[in-house]
Amino acid sequence: MSPAIISVETKEDISQNLIIKPPASRLSLHGNIRIPGDKSISHRALMLGALSEGETKIQGLLLGEDPRSTASCFQAMGAEISPLNTELVTVRGIGLGNLTEPVDILNAGNSGTTLRLMLGILASHPSRFFTVTGDGSLRSRPMSRVVKPLLEMGAEIWGRKGNSLAPLAIQGKSLKPIHYHSPIASAQVKSCILLAGLMTEGKTTVTEPALSRDHSERMLRAFGAELSVDPSTKSVTVTGGAKLQGQTVIVPGDISSAAFWLVAGAIVPGSELVVENVGVNPTRTGILEALAMMGADIQQENQREVAGEPVADLRVRYAGTGSVTALKGCTISGDIIPRLIDEIPILAVAAVFAQGTTIIKDAEELRVKESDRITVMAQQLGKMGAKITELPDGMEITGGTPLTGADVDSFTDHRIAMSLAIAALNATGTTNIQRAEAASISYPDFITTLETVCK
Ligand code: SPQ
Image (cartoon, rainbow, N blue to C red; front, side, top):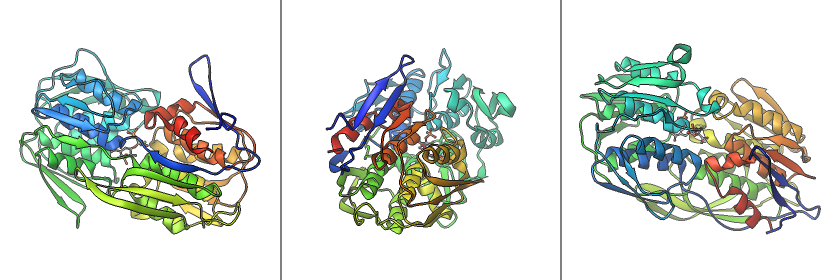
C-alpha cells in the first residue's frame, strides 16, 4: 500500500474526496482481487427468499447500500433476515402472497432494482396498501416503464408526473396476465412483470427487443416457479400460482465490479491482476467481448458452475509497449449494449487510452441511470483532457490523448466514482474525486482494494 498515492478526505457533510496522485516514476498494479458479490443476484436472493416458504441461505451477499435497501424493505413487510454479512445471511420467508402491509413508507434508497422489482411484487399483493420512495436520484428515474405494464395487468398505482416518478402509492390487488412487448431491453422491466405474474392466475409473458440479464429467470426456476424461456423470440413466460421454496444461493463476484480492475490492468503499464470468482453469465459478459475487441489481454481461468451461475477467475495483463496501450478504438452498439450497460462508464475510460476512435451507440438508457452517465462521463473525463463528444445515445471518444489530474465529481453515482478513480491512476498529477463515497452502493471495499493493488 502506498498512502502517498491514495488518500481520502472526509468533509463536514460526511461526503468523501478520493485523492489519487500516481508517482512520477509510474505505477503498476499487481495482485489477486476478490470482488464483492453480484448486486443483481443479491437483490433477487433477498426478494425470492422473502417470498418463499422455509429458509433461504445466501453466501457471498453484496453488503453494499443497494442490497441493504432491499433487505430493509422486505423486513418491513414481515421477512426475517439475519444481520447482513458475506459468510451467510438467512432469510426466513413468509410465503408468496403473505407480505404484511408496512406501517411506513418503503425506502429503496439509491436502488432502481429494489424499487422496480418490488413494484411487481407489491402491486400483486391484494388488500394491502404500500408507499415507496427513494433518494433524490431514484426519485428522478423513470418508473413508467414498469408502472405502464402493471397498469395493463390491472394494478392500481399513483405517483407524480402521470404515475411515472416516485414516491408511488400502490393498492395491491389480484392482477390479470398479459403478454408484454417491452420497448426496451431491461432486466428490471422483465423481472418486475415476472414477479407480478408469480401471483397472477394464468400465463404472463414478457418479450424483449434484445436479451437482458437473466438472473431472475435462473433464480425463479431454482426456487420452484413455473417458467419457460423461448430464446428465439426473446420471451419468458411465468405461470402464476406455484409455491416458492427456500434455497441455498451462492452469489458469485460481480462482473460489473471486476470491470474496474480489468480496465485498470489493461491501461496501467506493467500491470497484471487476477480477479477471482467472477460471475460470467453470458448475459453479462459483453464487457469481456468489448475489451477483447479492443485488444486487451484477458484470460478466463478455472471456469466452473456455482449454484446455477457460470464463474471464472479473470487474469488481465498489460499488453502495450511502454506507456502506449495495446488497445484500439472500436464501435460498440446493438444487442451487446444490454450485456454491458453498467460497464460503459469504465469502458469509456479504456477508450480514452486506446489508439483511434471508439463509438458507443444505442445506449440512451445510460441517461436514466443513477446519473446521466453519458453527460457526466464526457464532462468529468473532459476535465482531465479526454476528447469525448456526446451522442444522443452514446459517445464518440478519440483516444490516445494523455490525461492530467483534475477536480472531478461522481455526481453521487457509484460507477462514475470508480471509473474516474481508474482513469486517475493513468493520469499525470493529482485527481480529486468528490463524493467518492458513492462507491459503497455496489463496492464498499473499493478504496481499500485500490490501495492494495497500487504497489
Ligand atoms: O439498481 P440500479 O440502481 O438500476 O443499478 C444499475 C447499476 O449501475 O448498478 C443501473 F444503474 O444496474 C441495473 C442495470 O443497469 C441493475 C439491473 C438488475 O439488477 O436487474 C439491471 C440493469 O438495469 P435495466 O434498466 O437495464 O434493467
